[in-house]
Image (tube, rainbow, N blue to C red; front, top):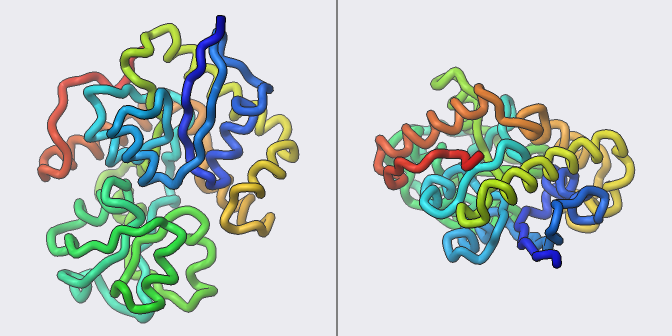
Length: 278
């Protein structure tokens, strides 16, 4: 008898690319079926906080609040260099000028917001809205600036915005490590065997997508904000890399450093739980 596992991930091209094979019966988790749920990243963060998902894509910021109930998988992460969130504004400005001003962020528990808070104090006046609404909101004047992620990285200049700070580049220079954006979590009570099987299946799903690059395209376009093939390809190339296959030692060090710095600033609770179950 098979058991169903709920899997949450975003509708962004990097996630639909990675999970296509797993959710279309090209790759299987032994003894289990997968029930996917596509939501924006902050909704996924909240669903995990409410313990509603067995497996989920998560912001590493949110993972800092979830270590007592979820473990990190080795595969499926969005982590790398040159792929961090961007702080943008309608006109040229600097970080000092934005202290105390309202800044739109794609979720309180997103890594985008965590990086903004780690940069320094004075950026706590937030407008919390979905990532795809940030550019329109800043354009309307609802906020002085916004932190953008996903496809918006490739389109903000066309909308007439200026980059204030590449938060990912700041992190890389300050820490010497790649930036951990999002990871895949499994509930601790699923146990080692199921967790390991899921981890291997996610890796196999990504390998399938790489071997059959055209096959997931229709599924990706069904959910993407931007339908232009060039934007979709750039998105996948930026956020899907060898760290997505396996975090490895450098990826693990990046996650540990991000969480330890957040703990030191009091932005997440301290935890003695291990990152991985297997």
